[in-house]
Length: 526
Image 1 (cartoon, rainbow, N blue to C red):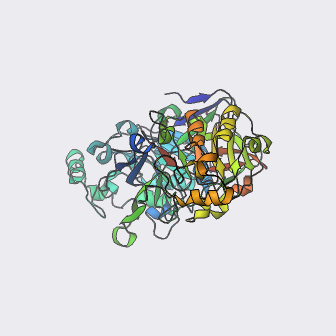
Image 2: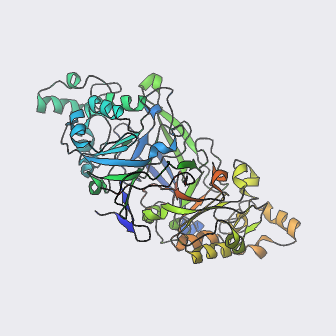
Image 3: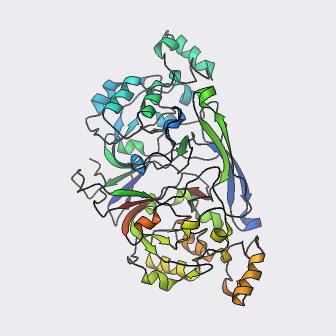
């Protein structure tokens, strides 16, 4: 399948991810993904789904702490590990075969120090909840892991259920196993070999890579065949989850069809993380979905690995809303074009105080000037008080109808803001809208402060959400992190959500690429 080309830039975007959601195949022994609808359009006027998952489901990044005690978690790893030049190696493998160092040597002439390396064995075509997909897969030999470490690559991904051969995991005769005795018995019967002798070490390739500080991606898929044997700029940006053992990611390949050279132009640009930390203690919008629960399933001391499971909604921390969240019969989070999530834009300073409104005039006067096709990040200053407090949630400034209409008319392609929602809090159901008021005291306070009722000044329910999202413009809430460092600059921004079919939103890692000292160079794909 060909990548989707953005005519204005010549960039082609390839989705290299497997979808996540209800029924997603999960590693044998892990609990499956569970979804529950918490808000319905017919009853509440919005769609919000609660979910329970481990991060080792669909296409995901593993942090060193997953298999190496006291090692970095996903939030500890520098973000430049997850974005940059790379190569997709075509190494077809069949049932129970090993990817050896010799395979990489034969296919890996294009591997350079600092590359992201993805390995396409063809096994992603068998992705399913099946014994065959998990139990008969190929895997990476320890020699191959060492070859990649010696080449100083910065991230390794495979289109397999695990980095290691299944018989080198707990599916075989190793710690916590055998989870499925069929794998051991069938291997013995069909090959005449002893699985323990053939695979004497537990997760040896995976542990070697993680111990070397190289994050790993498992279950790549999607359009990976279209990039096999080619270079591309690759992105697999995990959530900023402090203590996180892994993160589901949107694995994306980007190719610049207008370039013929493959060299970096000048100094490398600087990546800034514009995301608030996420985890068990993340603050969240004071609505009707309070569940936010975490538990450990596996411990290093007991099980030799670290795996967590959590229950939450997507609308917490730095996240993106889908049109279907606020408007019935609209696209879900997986239906935005990938090009919407990557491109040049501006971070603009529009300082505001309690309950002030960001106006169309504010946007018109913002500098650098907001141009058609821009990604726009709005800095009101409120990200500095992000946390579990009413000043951030109930008393923040925000967008309203006129500003959202201005952004649509200007033709921007994505909008992020450092406040509690795309809409002013008094245009949400914290006030007298939809199923609200969740916080009825706000109307009395507003009347005492202004002499007017909330509905006098904010008669519409979430008009900024509805205006932006109905026009295909993704909206990101709770932008933060290093936002001040790029405010007043023109940058390249990216924020890729999960590939969640029917999803009402997604947590995202928002990254700004500061090009002051060096331009972003996208691989030409040759």
